Image (cartoon, rainbow, N blue to C red):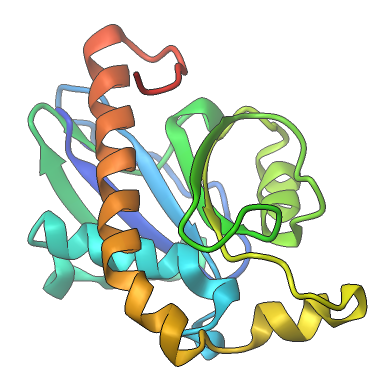
Length: 196
């Protein structure tokens, strides 16, 4: 969700999204970046989307500005990026989802422009709530466990010490991918395109 210009609103979603009433809109494009995860599972593979948002908030100097927003079951921080900002009451294509991706190795990032949830329950919940599947998504690779039956536990486990060493540059890279994509879309209008 964004306010005016290319400012960004970061939302760490733990569950559910509501259609809150409209807020006054300053001039400029608004974007929302939602990091999927679970507050009780901070530091786990499942909550890597929230970790990316924390890094993004640090990058934009708003890490100390998170505020609880009960209407959307989220903590929210608002930042500016040139003329854009992230806010509430956006079209689904203006909402970025950041989430863990089992089918990509740890460290691999991919922007997906809409489509199905591909088995991700948090994405499915967003699609159902927004009644749309057009949201751009930054998929953050967490890898897949070697044993197929261990997926649920693997996702809910904390990153290993070796994986934790790889997280800071990954989170910074994810931040840059998001900002690049948002800048590109802000300059070109609202059309969803892959970053060059």
